[in-house]
Amino acid sequence: MRAFVFLLASLFCGATCGQTFPAKPVRIIVPFSPGGVADSSARVISERLGVRLGQSVLVENRPGASGNIGTHAVASAAPDGYTLLLGFDGTMVVNPHVYAKLPFDTLRDFSPVTKLGDATLILVAHPSVPAKDLREFLAVAKTRNFSYGTAGTGSTPHLAGELLAQRTGIALTHVPYKGGGQAMGDVVGGQIPLVFTAIATAQQFVKAGKLKALGVSSARRSSALPEVPTFVESGLDGFVVDSWVGILAPAKTPPAVVERLQKDIAAVLGEAETRSRYATLGIEPAGNTSEQFTEQIRADLARWERVVRQAGIRIE
Image (cartoon, rainbow, N blue to C red; front, top):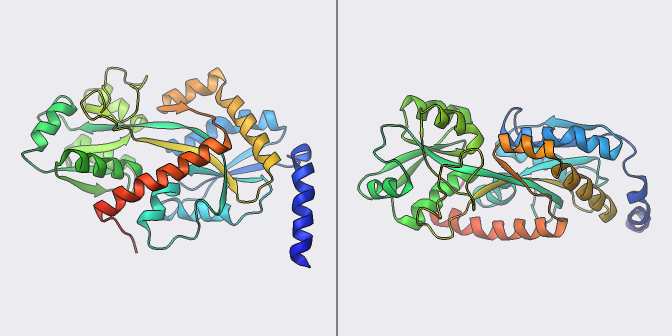
């Protein structure tokens, strides 16, 4: 009987929720601490999205367990569009292969709304590394082992480093940190030679001459550091690794609500101010459809499964 009532309610909501939504404030759960690129990407859109929805859009941080705690909270929330997730590729498509147990299933427990954008990744080196660009670095790395730092095990920059080693045959040793800031501090101080990170984290040190930018792993050069070549330009055909952020709702959220959110978020991403603020974060705005975002998530799950398995990364 309860299942029948739920079915009727779902059918009714599918026809009417798009017209009545939203009737109260909307929350975006960010599964990380304040201040990072992922957190900032949500805060940039929240105010303008609230104007379009006619309701406040609140950003709430629930950090912990590499994003798993906040992500699980949204997976367990009511599927009504009022609790949304700031999804990060490291959590959504990498963690499922890295962690032996997860409290959520990326494909089963979420309705993707839209990708906010792609954050450009950059490989930077301490000035003592005897290479001015990626080509020279790869030549040197054929003769010696280098270590590289990232914001943590299983992060997209971590896997980008693993993929680089797999593609080129060089030896790279990963050094995980609790945050990107700590990693940057150590590479600037010379404690480690390399860091793979989001370009927003490193650009100030590159511009100040404290670090050397070896290359960006995006499809195109970044407007933040346009003089830095891509990995593809440096001879690694097809080597494109961006770290995306996006908005997801709990599974079974009414399609009309998902469509309303997608259209309004895409409109905000198209505004000049949003694009300018995203540029400072090193993010290329997207705003694709729910179906396109879903297909990318499926493809990325398959892509990173192979890299994680070959690298032998596992957290019990």
